[in-house]
Length: 191
Image (cartoon, rainbow, N blue to C red; front, side):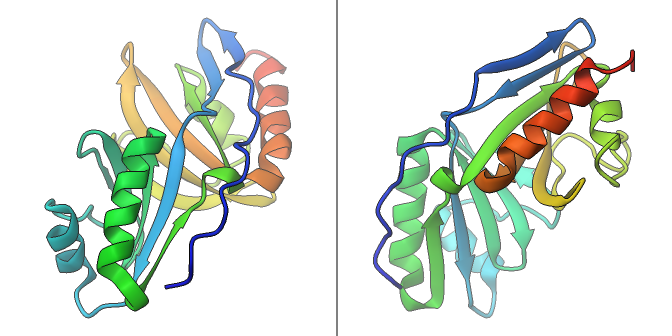
């Protein structure tokens, strides 16, 4: 495994971007993120051995307090949470993976948002081809998809006041673009 890259400054996001009675868009500048990828025969068994919990199922995320682990692909997971907690998981995985894996802090290269409320699905649907209904995307669902002209990660978080809540993560180079699209849609006609 290569030496860890130097940590760069965190992306700058506004905390609260938009709030209306039916929707809330918030930047999450303190969310730390790491990508864990291993090349082993049974990656789920590796995950369980290293972290002491069962790996998330495909297209799902789990919340083994104090972090969240989302399945990205076979043998590949996204770990999110507070900086010190993600660092602890990242270090443990890096030591266990050795030359059979890649464990990377991706916090500086990503921007995270939370979109919640009654209009959240409609706003996302204006830019994303996914079925965001409860049956297709229940709480705990997690996947990568496209958002307009860019890729992104989306997960369904626990509902907020009975309304859907989504975590959306973009590559930092596309964050301003995504923020602009979301805010334009939010400020548009009544949804």
